[in-house]
Structure formats: C-alpha cells, structure tokens
Length: 325
Image (cartoon, rainbow, N blue to C red; front, side):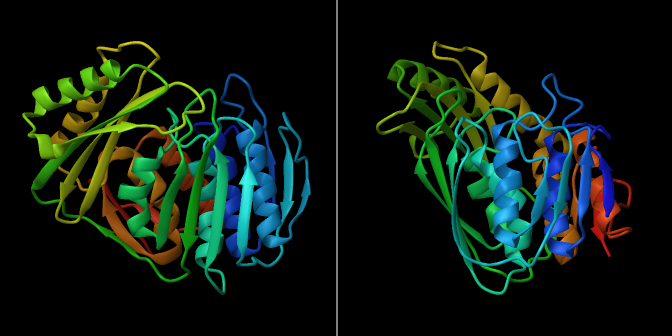
C-alpha cells in the first residue's frame, strides 16, 4: 500500500488524479489522505468523485471513501479493462481532467477504448477542449470529439475520446520558428459583439489576416460562456493559450491570452508550462524527453507523486530538460 499525503506540494486535485492513474497502471493499491488540502474547499468535489468512480469502473477496483467531501480514499485496483465507457460529472467540472485520469491505464490496455464524459469542456483552471485536442492528444494516441460545448457554471458539455493503446514516447526538445498563429473566440448564449470585440483585439495585436481568425458560436447553448484562445503552430507541434471571460465585454480577455503567448515565445521552448505538466505521465510511461521553462509548483508536485510509484523514472535534468529513464 502506497501512502500519499494529498497536502504535498500544490495540494490540489492533481495529486489524486496522478495517484489513481499510476495505481491502475502499476497495480499498486494506494491510500490518499488530506485530499485537496491546499484548496479552499478540501475533499472530493463532483469532478474528483467522478474520477475516482470512473477509475474504479475501468479496473474493478475496491474503493473506500468515494463520497462527496471525503478527504481520504483507499483505492485497490484490479485488472484494467478496455471498453466503451460513459461518465457524467453532474456539474460543470472538467471533462478533460476526468479523461486524463483514465487515459494512462487505457493507453496500456489490451484493446482500444472509447470514453465519453459529460460536464464542462471549456473551463478556466483546467485543460479546455482546444488545448486537449490540438496540443495534448497528438502525443498520446487519442482522438477527441467535442460532442457538445459546456462552460462554467452551467456545464452540459460532452467530450468523447477514442484511445488506441501503444507506445507513445515524448520527444519535444527543439521548437524552431513559429510558422503561424491563429486566433479563436467562442461565445455561448451571449452577444456576438462581445466575441467579435475580443477577436478584433487579437487580430490587431498580432496583425492577422482573415484566414487566421476564427469565430465560434456555440449551437444550442446550455448556458452563457466566453472564451478565446491562440494557436501557435511550429514544426514540432502546437501550443494553445486560452482565456475565459464573463457574460459582458471583457477588454482584458485578449490581453490574458496574448500575455501567455508572449511569455512562451520569450522562453524559446517547445513545451509550455501547462503542456509540460500534462506530459509528465506519458513521459513516465513511454519514455522520452521534453524541454520547458521553469517548472510550476503543479508540475513539481506531479513529479513527486510519480516518483512514489515509479522511483527515479522521471527527473529534472536542469535547463528545462525533463527526461525519463
């Protein structure tokens, strides 16, 4: 039994998710205590509870403590089973984070799987669909479909993933020149003017032509939402930088996405801060290397948890180079 203190490092939900993922992959039981102790409302929220129960379903785990608000979970995994799965969060919690909890185990299963998750698809503070689809999925043998958009606080979105097991080593050390940047704005149940205003600010700041700006109106919106994102394309991949706004015009929304893009450009690395965090588990499972900027507390915490299950498997080699093996 591996004992994990959920208050370690950043003290958020990533400690829980990585522990569940690696328990399923390695077959090692784990006890998690002080879950999400670093958050204002500790314990399992609906999103985290869905992740625990979904993990239990795909590997026939025996679980204790899988109730809302629980700060302690004991998870004893069985054998991972490929299949066609559907899970509903019941709130606007992140569908992407639930999927990423299951992905490592299903990536080493004996056959392909499909996973459908209902909840939030475009959430602040978690990987939204454009990031997962364009920046993350190409590295891990996953095809994603946005069935229905879901913004906070209404939720109501749906994400579907087709997972093909295999070996997917990470190799992202050199970036090369940025070939082009595309700007996107999406509105859900709010005025077109707000989305076009945000998109116009991005177009002006980056001197983009019409072929590089994209307006998305959410069909049949469940609730209000506003998002913009920048898609930077370069020889070895794509980087996505997203910002979320309110129901009204938000002059700072474009500036938020632009600031993320400019910071990444200045670092001259192929893997941005958020993608580095998301690639830690694929790196641990399939090997490889990546180069990024200074590691966030979130990423450093993720490395700590990985080391509990796979000691010495992933290490910080200095200079932004993270290597496996």
